[in-house]
Length: 262
DNA sequence: ATGCCTGGAAACTCCAGA
Image (tube, rainbow, N blue to C red; front, side):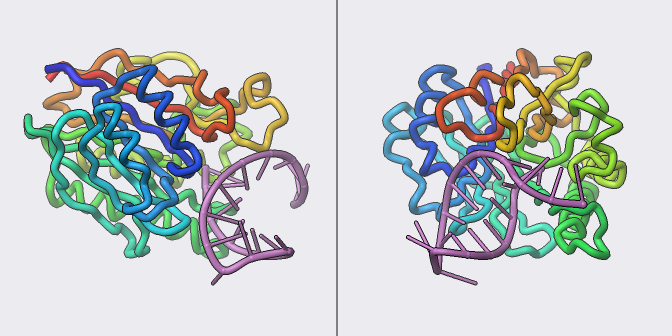
């Protein structure tokens, strides 16, 4: 049974409940993975999601910051939650579908302003988080798995609006790109979005700090869909819903989608 | 180099986002 999966950094699931409902109604993904819910799990507005058919949810939350949730029309059972780098943050939740496919939903630390762990503790935490991801995948190589989320790194030159200008900007520095590649390689993860859309600039995030984000188009591809090689060939129809970034009172991230024929 | 904007909370100012 094919299913469509979406990932979206929502930047407050409670404030943007109407946008989530509009997105679910308009696009009908089977599974929606959210990041930056900024809410304890018990305060996520589940009733409205349930009414649209999203009867299943696994989540981790905390007050004010971080928070990840998987809303699903398909039955899903919780399959663990990691606290990489021991930050005490709600940045990962895993679920398993009845067909055995595991879904990992990650919100990797942003990393602060300066790309130097000696003067910016947050950057060190981001690198530690990524090396813990790498070690976890290395010690238990995933199979039949999908990994999505806001990984807060735009790895390719055509994942940012200006590669040279962003080389020293957190999210596109070579040390981060290398750390992400090591985590990706450790799990044999295939970048589904780029397998589907290999050429051309591709962004999923545009800063709020632009008078006209659409015209300026200074975007970055921070949100990703990966899959293990045993199921990556089943993925198709990848897309990034740029229009959603233009909805009223939007998140600064756009949803990223893929369909899996499994 | 800085500000631009947005959300949450220990809220009328600050931290975090990236």
